[in-house]
Amino acid sequence: MIKNYLKIALRNFQRHKGYSFINIAGFAIGMACCLLILLYVRHELSYDRYHEDVERVCRIVIDIRTQTANRVFALISPTVAPALKADYPQVEHAARAIIPSSSRLVKRKDTFFYEDRFMYADQELFDIFTIPFIQGATQGALTRPNTLVVSQRMAHKYFGNANPLGETLEINQQEYEITGVVTDSPENTHMKYDLIASLETLKDWQEMSNWYSTMFYTYLKLRPDVKMEEFSQQVSRLADKYVGERLESGGSTYHYFLQPLSRIHLHSHLRYETEAPRESCLYLYFFLCGALHSHHCLSELHESLHCTRGQQG
Image (cartoon, rainbow, N blue to C red; front, side, top):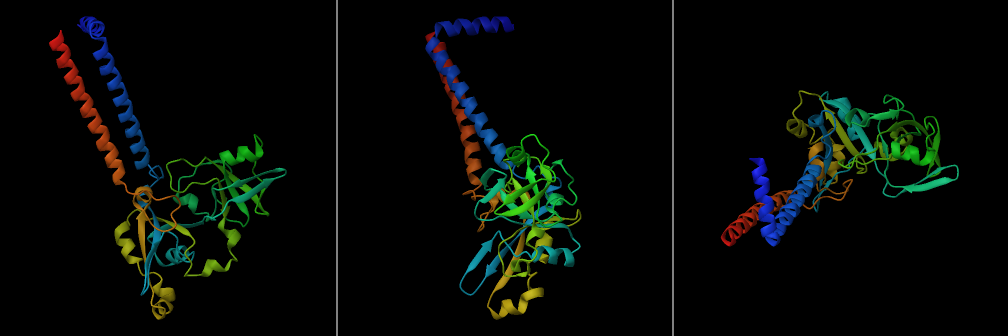
């Protein structure tokens, strides 16, 4: 029977070459467009979902309200993470990261480049994010000042096939010892990295004790039995315990809230995001509707051409 279908298809193709070409080309282009749209949508929806226990991971952000303004920042004070660890047993891990606004000059001997994906971070970042180590040990990689974890791409760029562990890189005229090499940052993450330096390097910086600073991204991994929405309400007025009187005298209020990690890429539009915010996640649904509509139109075209061909035959 399949053999007969093939003979009929070949016969019809020879008799109606124009219609057959339009039909086949139209379906091929339509299917290709549909597949590309579906792959793109899948990629966008996959952001940060590869992390282990992602349903327990969130970012804490701040809504600062004054008598004249209301501003919501993705960046908060570096004092929040240690305060949460000390006051709330619901928090299993907390990590801070600060990303400089300008490129860093990275040098090794006579080789130097300006690099963009540089950050300072706590050791616990590796307990929250799934960042596999290729060389070196995860534990203790960023516990000492002036230590550095590099991506595989950076290791090859500056050291070739040589082992970079124990070697140093000069970053903005400061030496860092390489303690680990990790897999390259995947594209489907809002927090892209190449060079992760120890936040202990900045321990004497005055901003590290400033409750009014908005310079640090802060991530939490909650314990398995903690409901994120309920905990978000519990920590909303965290700053009141520490600087409540000064906030009140200045006519300001600090409201913290939690964002699930997997929703940041498409749903967060705060000030100072790590990447340019999407206009709206609705565009994905528009793409999906467009793909389905194009498939429907192709089906109608196929039926139309089939009927026309039948009438001419």
